[in-house]
Length: 160
Image (cartoon, rainbow, N blue to C red; front, side, top):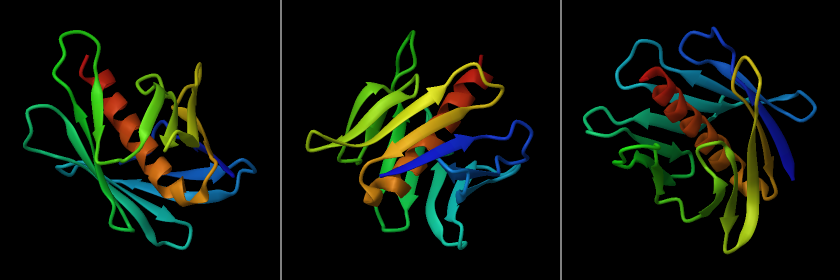
């Protein structure tokens, strides 16, 4: 079991920040593109190896994000057409999301078994997420998913 905390720096250019474990030891580095279209994020381990790449598709009617993991796995987050509350679909993940995806309080399940839990701390100046991964093989995927969802939420906040 591993526990991570993501605290975004409020004023970081391009969205560059470090993800730590529960002891405060850096585990991942997130590097967001600055002034480039489409917006991308690259997640690296602390040895500088790429863990995943997140890219917002540019020519789509509704927002769509492609997440490519270093192991070759790909999944997508797409905004669904709704009139009121925003709704997103995760495609190609082969997992079940249980809980409130939009409020960042959910679990990821494989064959009915929880492999990770994600929760957001409220009343903070920046987005702060606590992530518990029960199966270490899902660490990279879970971190990448949380970064992608947070960016989707940031776009929603900025569009209002």
